[in-house]
Amino acid sequence: MALPFTFDLDAWAEARERDRMDALASFRERFVIESPELIYLDGNSLGRLPRATMERLATVVGQEWGERLVRGWNEGWLELPQRLGHKLAALVGAEANEVWVADATSVNLFKLLTAFLQYQRRARPQRRRVLTDRFNFPSDLYIVQGVLGLLEGFHLDMPPEEAGADPAEQIMARLGEDVALVTLSHTLFKSGYTYDMAQVTAAVQAAGAVMVWDVSHSVGAVPLDLHGAAADGAVGCTYKYLNGGPGAPAFLYVRRDWQALLHNPISGWFGQQAMFDFDLTYTPAADVRRFASGTPPILALAAIEAGLDMLLEAGMARVRAKSVQQTEYLIRLWEEQLQPLGFTLNSPRQAARRGSHVALGHPAALGIDLALIHEKQVLPDFRAPDNLRLAVAPLYNRFTDIYLAVQRLREVMEEGSYRRYSSAGLKVT
Ligand SMILES: *Cc1c(COP(=O)(O)O)cnc(C)c1O
Image (cartoon, rainbow, N blue to C red; front, side, top):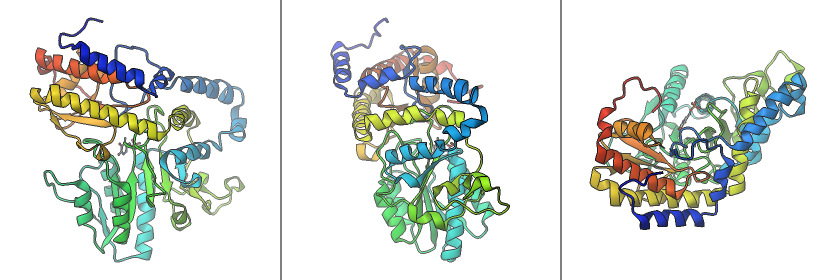
């Protein structure tokens, strides 16, 4: 590989030394890395493929489906959502019987919001306000809107736009005795801002409302303690830092004491107490399985497990420690080398308030993103209006990846090639 003209041998030696000292470095070899030249900084959109997943899928397809056929249901398939739920529970600080793996994050959010709001309507009918924020993932906002369209009488509320305001303070300032439920993304998909889950949950509950988190951008990158924080409900995604594959089934968490009080609005047979009795009347399972609906996608579920196992083996404390070191390193390089080129830091400076990606702002961020992808073998992503998102996935990203990505970013700026790109024809950025 030709050395780029911006190369500084001392800085390169520092990045190499950090990789050499990295206790998690060997996990990288357990992922499929087809082109070593490619610097992949989009693990918060789609995580890399674990090697063990390829083998597992070959077995599930070839042997379990191909040979065992319908017998597979009694040979592990029926238990798979629960088995994965137990592993996820260990990762998110939940009890084993508080997590279920199923459906898309959006669908799980629909189920939990509907169930909690129906409960609130019965128990606390004067509470009619549902609070969220404009930093939430758009699909979550669409789901909230859909649920409020079905359950008449509730209305949506968001803090107004206020430059420089702290999102948590804005939310806490709007709590009141008419609030039924608060739903937020724990780590915000654009800025990477991360709420203090325990603090916000406690404030919401002290105000008499229910707290539902979306941990999609945290799980696998930020340690979570859902039960410890006494979160009422949560949903999350498995194809980002969990490396579960495109469209991998998501998960939901419902705190144990809530489970018997809530009704799943998609009351299908997989949530039925004794599903193979084929009774004509729906009687939900007593536990978290009541939030299951239809037949689980076994192939897609099987693809999640290897990624979960690796994170459990690495341990979230070590994953987080490396993630913080890497985002701090990236921010230092931004300050030294990119700020002078017009990039702003659109992520929190304080590590405790930041997830595992750093958003850099630039008016030409989309063109820069495309130039990096098409000319420089760097794969970050773009989120409107001006965010270039650079995510570090501690299990496979190296410090040298970060150093090289910043150097290639400087080249793009110095060459001016980003001016040639526009958004024409683009679907996923
Ligand atoms: C990625 C992501 C989702 C994904 O939702 P799906 O319904 O699984 O496509 C939802 N919420 C947040 C906050 C996300 O980051």
